[in-house]
Length: 234
Ligand SMILES: *[C@@H]1O[C@H](CO)[C@@H](O)[C@H](O)[C@H]1NC(C)=O
Ligand SMILES: *[C@@H]1O[C@H](CO)[C@@H](O)[C@H](O)[C@H]1NC(C)=O
Image (cartoon, rainbow, N blue to C red; front, side, top):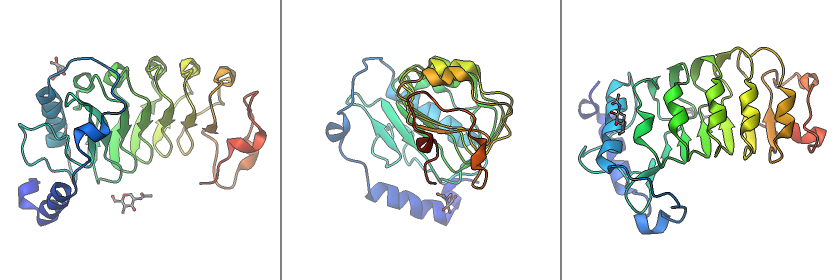
């Protein structure tokens, strides 16, 4: 489906154009990295992914201009993308065609509540600046990749509500800055590795076995946590 043929998407794009983000000067506050990347490479990577999606509500009117002025995208002062927020955007497709190595400055990736399926690709581990990763409420399958443990900057990892299987990799215990880890509502087997208890900054943990009516599944409490803090209201 071409965005140009769809009146809904055209009206959405008008909304995007009329409510742009703050100017780059206002939002460059967290610019700390100096990794150079051509903004056009980032734009091309995004457009290439979008063109491979089955459905979406995304529309970039001019492929030659970095999409820094769109509400979904934040850039640093050099025009390099630091944040992609596409929650609830009716995105249906996989992550295979998204070239993550094109986004060396990406800190925030939010794809919550879409219809993204397939495995979590290992390309994603190239995002060395990533602090926030939300892939929850999609249809991701396969195992939680051990390679996620190599994204040392991660503070928030949300994978709830997918079709993930297998065991929780011990490598997640290497994410020393991790504050929020949500793994509930998947098909994951086994418990939470005891090593996760070494994560001193962890404030919120939802285990794979958590459900609304199964509180007794608490079989692990990090030493520094109170029992109650494991179960935030949802
Ligand atoms: C999920 O996205 C759909 C649109 O695709 C929206 O209607 C729904 O409200 C969203 N749900 C949540 C919990 O955000
Ligand atoms: C992915 O992006 C990088 C950096 O922009 C580029 O060098 C590489 O060729 C791209 N890979 C593919 C498969 O397009």
